[in-house]
Image 1 (tube, one colour):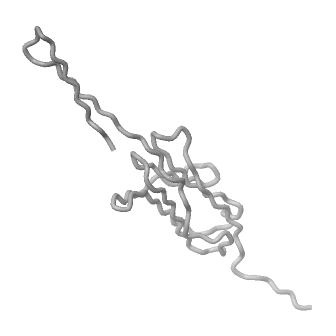
Image 2 (cartoon, one colour; image 1 turned 90 degrees about the vertical axis):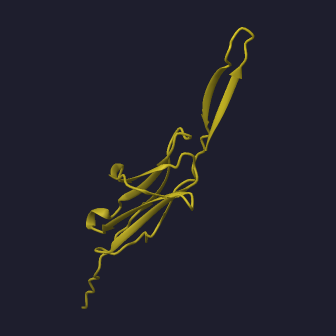
Image 3 (cartoon, helix red, strand yellow; image 1 turned 90 degrees about the horizontal axis):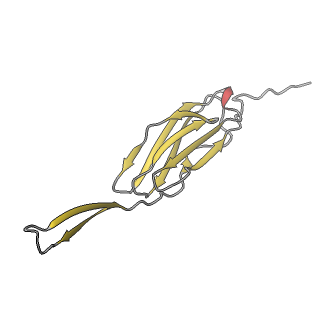
Length: 133
């Protein structure tokens, strides 16, 4: 949300008033992000759609995905009607995802540090080995 302010000063000796226009932007932090669309124990080979959402904020926040502290995805969509931003990260679970931490961070100029949500996977094998004696 932004506001526009006008200041007019009239001086007796001036023919025209002196005018200045000032702009003020109200900064507001977003809600903490939430991650949906996952199981903490996915099966090897599963396709996962992690969704990160943050609501509110002025300006709207940016969202960034990390996998084990490395930037993974920077794209997101803004839904103006619902006043939220959303990013969907789609991938196939592999062996390297066992113990991996996926983190979504939201930030805007109203925050000194980003807010985040994270999920850690414990990958299960697709097949079990049963020994019969």
